[in-house]
Image 1: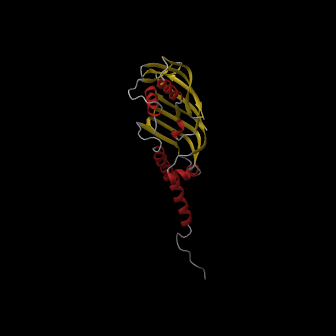
Image 2 (image 1 turned 120 degrees about the vertical axis):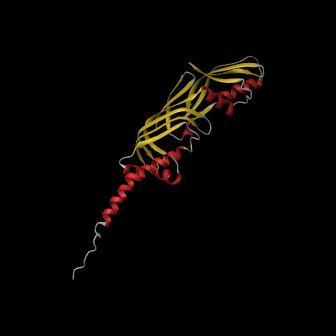
Image 3 (image 1 turned 120 degrees about the horizontal axis):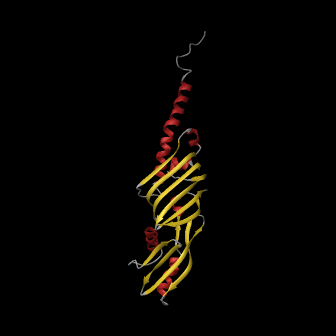
Length: 231
């Protein structure tokens, strides 16, 4: 006796597969975008603007952590140690740890190809110098961005001083100072100590959470511009 097949029994697996595909193609990209924004908030406290995007199709690639046409476009980004005026990153291809993103909320690029550009104001560099490197409660010493490089100058404990430098890059993402000319109008030990502290200035852009290699620095209109390639 032939067993009668229940209506719809054979279409359930196919329907389930269709619903799964729809969920991946529609819901998963939205989930990834939401997690990306949450992950970047770990690095940036307050923002005037922060747009993050990528090509969402085919969503199957997202499951493997492959982001195509990825970009970050932000301004007035406050990090733990300094503020970025503007930041723009674009990567044709970016591989991230999708497990870390979805389970831990971490944005961890593994490899990619692209470019990044950001800017930091003279005022912010001066604030950073005073906050982490020198003891100057009355702001008698100023960090300045000149066309031929950075200069630190002022009057401290009755002694005038200035330090002409060039920017250097260490460990791919750390911006430091290399002194060219150092002048102190006297032999005040405190002033000399301050110059040594200034020379130890280091701005670690690795705190942005984006793996890149700085390949160009330029100064224009009291702003430091940083350009780099995505690793």
